[in-house]
Length: 315
Image (cartoon, rainbow, N blue to C red; front, side, top):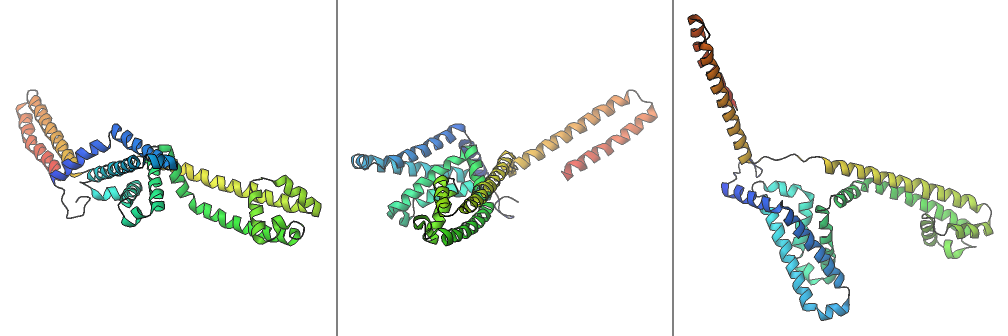
């Protein structure tokens, strides 16, 4: 049974191809080359924001873009070939799926005709650098794992903003219509105050309306800026620790058919060496035994040989 299915058989040619491509893709120079291509692609995106350079170097920029696409295509093909003996393992890795989607998107007719979408997908290639930067990979995994907790934070934060925005509209809409004239303006004002930006001016204007406004702003700052933001930071830090633990864990190694055959050969060799050692010990024991004991040793030798052979057969 192989990775291709219970009845699929991996041919020696596929095993040899996977071994050679795996040695190539796991080489350090290969990773450095791909990382350099990713940085080059990012630099090309930045250059294209200057209209003067685009007009003067339009032909060379298009040529460089086609060269990057060709290089990324060759890279993903080599990674696929490196899993020729176990193709399912390639699709189990989320980073492989992301790389494949980014590369294939460049060949879709709809994407190639839409300049905006094409630039966004080209920008997605920059995220492929996470494969070669462990810390960035940990950070992206942590962001993904923190999404459930972040969604809960957003729901609670939205409810808090809405309640305080309605209260602010009721008390301050007539005296401060610029900040609390509608529910939308009140939400925007309170969202900016969540970062404590302009809290001094807001409190001063509120005190001119009513001295009880200090209770309104103090309770909001306490709940929004101190409690909720610290809860969000705690969720992100917890997710970051979990992602770091996942990164440091050793992934289980998958043995191919050639590894299993090599292991069986080593076990058989070890068994034969044990049989030879038992024979030598039995012959050595003959010189130090009486004739009756010698017959017992000789009779025990075939039994030991059969027991060892049975062990090899079971392996």
